[in-house]
Figure (tube, rainbow, N blue to C red):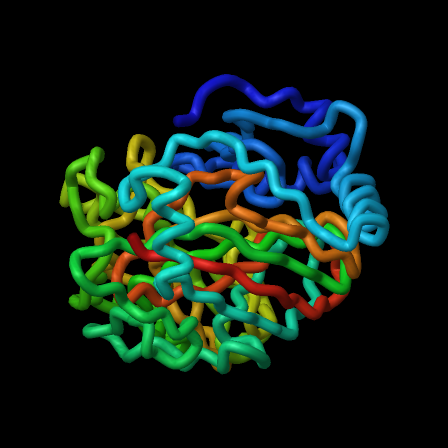
Length: 372
């Protein structure tokens, strides 16, 4: 349950004012549902226009670094970890915290490890780690138009999610995030569609392929279209040509045809960057909350060299990295214990969104999911 505004000074004390500002600014103009903010004790979500809501259970006196140092001191003294689980309201999939523990110990928990080499970029720009070197492997380019591709858990670049059996559903339960530079914001997403754009052309390109996940037009369904977002992902560096994304068409959350507002691309945009000056997602028509399918692409200029994917994705959780060379613990119990649903065959990957430092980072850590 999401309720109440979060005390901004306490949140800044925990994550640092710069990190809070980066996460907040990354959500400016967001049209979808709130996204869980992990690494923060309690249950905090980030809403559209950068507001924070939920239950913050930290920040009265300690920062995240203070808490980690205190925890290590206690661990060294006692040589044991004392756990004091809090009561929680669980989403579909588990009847109680005890049920979650039972499912995890029964072998239904999956752990995924990542180590990615990020790219340098301008402050507030965003990058996709789909094509970054490391673990998991580099993701391949989207298929050509008009068909495109609906990536799944076995697609190169995605984490190797194992689908549950017996009618169970899979949920995000926690993890760890580490960056060699400060102020990075990892956003775990499900990549539900991608298609390669012909860059040396100003003509319109039809897209006929559609995603296979998050296609419900009913707002109360877990697979509701609301929150699906679109971004142009650079595969190989673009020529130094100014360009805009112009008459790009999509179907909205109700199935109606809509037109994306014109969006400025980036001349000579580097590989792995998102080719948009404004954010990690392209804006939609006023009143729209998600993209069901992309139906047309168009660029205002012929960009002689370089390759781009148009990608539709769905957000799962924010994993902030406020401090360089410091592991942020995303335990799923004492932070946003919202058990976000992860659908069967999800093609999970990370965005490095709205970066706060220009240097190229190494991003590593792990996350866990559990079926029940």
